[in-house]
Image 1: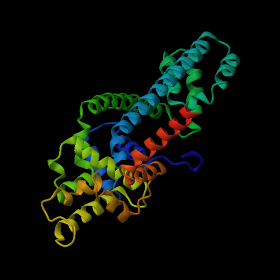
Image 2: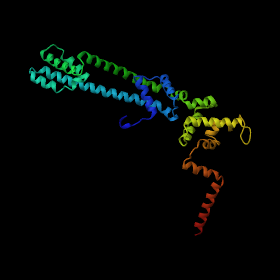
Image 3: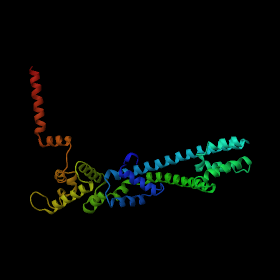
Image 4: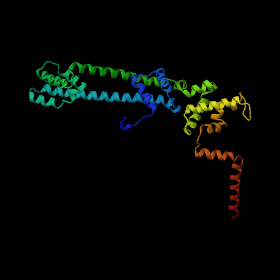
Length: 311
């Protein structure tokens, strides 16, 4: 990117897929690409959720580029038509050469050159002189009339194919159930399904687990995948330990959800080095006061009102 810039890796992944597939979208193929990437580095939960939107963005961006190219093609054809009209309208060789010399740079454009060739191939003397000029300009770059015609036709046909792929891709994005796709490609979902009863939960509960993992990873130095693993490990230790206050296997207290969204979350936070926000710290301190957190403020307010009323 210019200025040594960078883009989010999820966007880069979507862009790479679209570039290599000529804007053709397949949920199965895209899943394979994402899984291949995650074999090296798991994507974050938010990145996976963003992929469908990023895929749509890249397709629309490609469609915009094609629209710009079509508009430029139309402009170059119009310029070529204007040049052809002027050349065919004059019999003065000096005027003709003056007109053509102003468009030497345009002669290297395949659209301009192809359209001018089409207009000038009528067999007239004026057209013949202009064709000689055009062929001479093309030879300067090691090209010829046949090559530029083939190149222009290839550009037009490939543009039509890409446009069709984009339209079909945008429709497919709207038709795919991306929730199912997400759960099939998420490494975090996979490890939770394999080692816990995650698959038996409803979608809302599963999403709560994911949100908790995102929050915990964001305020620690661990990845989301590692946070999920540590939650599973803590649940496993609790289930296998029969000493002390730990409840044995079969209790809700040994379920991974108890460490992610339940009362034992503080144990997981301590294990991963979680740094609570200021608001969380204040809320937790207030909760520790128990009933005093309610009685003391009420008593103080009542006393203040009595003092004020006495005055």
